[in-house]
Image 1 (cartoon, rainbow, N blue to C red):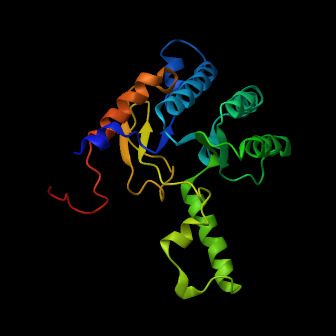
Image 2 (cartoon, helix red, strand yellow; image 1 turned 180 degrees about the vertical axis):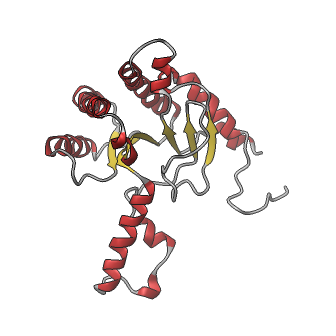
Length: 242
């Protein structure tokens, strides 16, 4: 592996933040305590990513499947998101972080939608780390929405049928304009991607960590990146001998 690759951080890191509830249960605490500590881990991850020169960080904050959890837990998670935006966006903006939110907004409370939009609008011209938050997000649903919009444009003559391509399709995804993840990290010991960035992670490297998300810190990110840097990314091709 070329030395330059071992020294270069991944451009885009995506994280499935898993294990809040189990972290709390093992300590005899309510699940809400785990989610509260999880927000602290988000703050640590964002700072560490910026310090390491990572350009894009995507976090899976709330999936479309999370609505099936008990209503009290769902309400707590939504309140946590609101508090995070109100308390942290000004500091993130001051540090040059750009915020982008992906996922379905239809059906969400208007006040919550406005908070998300205000955070995006405030930071849209920042040139530091891009923090992409997947909220009310499911990758299969994202792909279906993109296919539906593309089909409508073909039907209405805005797109030629013979002009379809993967690049064109990507422009209909929620992540349009954001490069695909180089590295996907999942905490909590599970080894699946749970309907997260299925299209975008076609050639991502996966690193699964046993530690729970509330335990995640800069050293955790460094370990995952070190493992990523040990791998040889061929994108379906063969290694070229020197």
